[in-house]
Length: 275
Image (cartoon, rainbow, N blue to C red):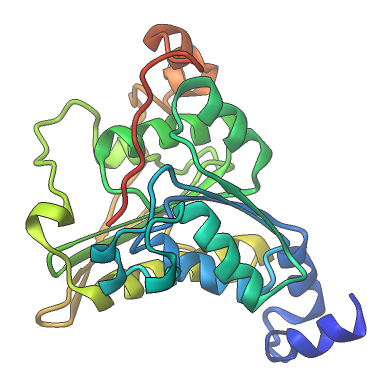
């Protein structure tokens, strides 16, 4: 670690639980952030400022005027710019010493699988169940820890799926794909601006703990926030031994889902649109 890094990250290094060793592990980490919107903005900003050594920021969308109410990576001057590039500019301004890879593309199938394989930690900052399940399957396939957040109206939630652990549940264990789940988006339902900041910042906190190897993560716990009353609830859940994704014969473990779905570079991709 250089003298400049020792100074930049000194407030981290002063923490007994983290120290130089923990900060060095953070610097050596590659975080994949899927979504540069309401959740991805604060998550990316805090990971960059904290010294995550490499960030791949993925979003296929452009900055819209309606995004500025909550998507703090972006500015009015960058309306119309690709969100991934706008995010790169914002993150580079905070910490020019880290590597930032902006990807303006939609991810699905083999492209998503290959990208997840390159990362140490994956942050799901998207807003639709199809994309969340696709990310989860890829993380199960490559045993990558997944930090997943969601925010709509005044309701937020966050959990961690540490798929390096045999006893860890996956996203499918908690929210089985194909269940009759209402699909809602902030473009229709609205979202309280600070809520995305709260959940996105917590995603960064969980990712940094995973990177540094400190503390206790939210694996097996779902935190639910009602921002109108500012009340938190905790739901504990366990791995589903018969899970169709992470179970012994699950398609995520074998990568069979890629062949079953026919997903690949030429297939119709799932869009990653953000809160």
